Image (cartoon, rainbow, N blue to C red):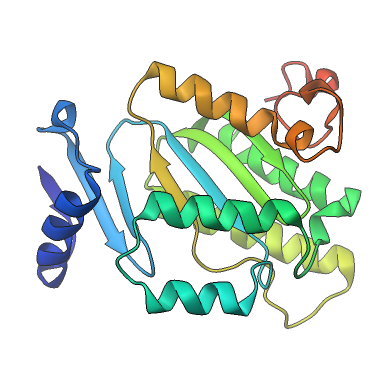
Length: 219
């Protein structure tokens, strides 16, 4: 493997790979970038990636404190725990419920795929306090997430008349997709989010997703 990371992270890479089993044998010779904030981020070259990011303040402080006290919790478990909290929508801001803001985020996602060509867009959904995205990157993933979150945060705050306030939580969750079956399962999970949350009866009714019936071939 070729890892584009600093020498100081090499021990972390090895231990996380063994502990979480996130390096599978079929990528034995694949190039992979790695970096770490609170969570490990592995990005194999040429693979589809499942991304989730959330509004700043959308997870309870107590939940985040518990995570900091358990730094070796597997990334997949962290995601499942955070997902359960986010879907309750009981804590923090729900800025994406505003149709103007949701439209801004959807349009930003669309521009990243076409005309900018930064990724192939497979699926997305914008919920009240978080976003799910399934893409095949054509540029470094950090550039994609920085661009999507930076542009949508600036425009979202302008729409809402907010100044000097953080819009998104700084860190995103990402998971690289292992095979075609997993890709379809994640696509279904993303597009059925509004149904699971009880917001609509079927995915085609949710305006802020790739499944929306009125979207056609927009992206």
